[in-house]
Image (cartoon, rainbow, N blue to C red):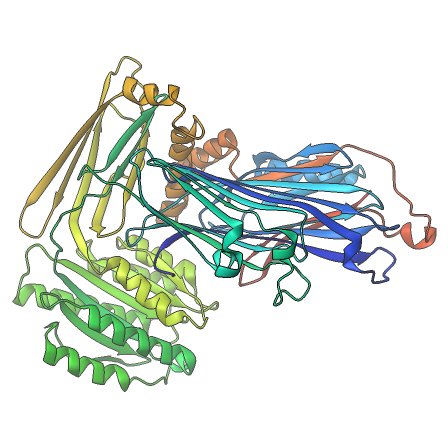
Length: 629
């Protein structure tokens, strides 16, 4: 279900061999405790993964702790406990963390470094060699905001512990002040065979989901002796009795969840710009055709659309946008079925032709109250026409001039996602990576569904009494989505926060108004309705950092300096691992361990701790730090 917002967690332990190089049964390493605890308070999720392992062998064994993070999550805590001693990770400025790590290494200490690359941290992996008859515990915490797409929030937990675990539990607790409209559990871990391991308790505002399989249930016929491997998916939405959303104030911070309903859809003018160069051959082209046929079926009669395919040449199905009526859709389907891959890649010419097609349409048949969109699908770098990436971005920006929205879909692992992301952000849209999996057609179709039904245009949000507010201007609001704005209230004497929203519908300008007394928000806290008291403050910090990181790619080097300073200050204050910070873990000096089984070999192969952070799917190694003690 690629079209629905989801927080993703994959966790597992990889059990290695002895330090003597002799392979021993992995049963020597006993994962006796494996818990995942996720607490969601008004969409803000804090997830803690705890794993405890004992080495029952007569020699050392290596254990890998592996977590796949949601794309926009920030690690905020990491703790290792070795032989009962606790070692906490500390978030520092990246350069300072590196210096501390280097000093520790030079002194013969064990140290680890957790850092992010670019704007994502998608995979966390740490290894530790566990001494004979010793225990190790891992605890990792990360935070994220669940986004609403197609009317749903999703929290997806994938589990592969690699063996049967005595104490294996996944728990999810959700509190929503607006009330929970529906909640479902799905996935392999919620299948009929494991249904008895899943319990769900749902009240008006709170949900508790627990997955706790017995030892017998973990020894499934298809598990191959490695225990359970699957996913638990929690899907839910909230009640929306007020058309303008929900405004909350807690301890001097506010958050506004804006998702108006009962609005008429706005017609859209959409141009699909499809790469059919040689690199799109085979499965990618087949899946693109399949997705486009389904997308054409979803167009409404009041929509207008165009279709452009490109390799080194740019070819338009028709030279203008046409109504999405039966005859035009039938002709477009025939054209889509005939698309084949060939040639090179002229992204610049293709996107500019799409923009010009929209401009010609608006000049000849101006559609008031309509949304104009360009959707680009490509799998590679430009190799024909203008090939300079900055020049292409400038050309597209100058052509669009903030009149239309550009969405970029990058097909496959080799696509230049940074290039597409910046070009989309500069033109009011976003970029999405489409993975070369069997469900790629569903990924394409799912993305289109997210932008298929615009309800509001030019959304402007204002908060009387608020300051240090996150993004307040949005080009479109789509059906099934949600706009989230957070900020601070610096005036301690302010009694009431007022939210004013102005936007355009198909026929008119509209306004929404809501106000909340700060005492009302604080009063709800005394009733223990929130899972953790500081969630609004941390949500504000999280959203501020994320948006600043996203927007800094649009700034010059000089303009980026104050933005980086702000990101760094917030990251350090709230212990977020971001591209500007790292988490360093240092173990105080201790004795060297020499194993009696092979003193000569173990003089070189001493107990080691390894931290790795790698980019998931592309397998790009960020750091692989090993130190002996």
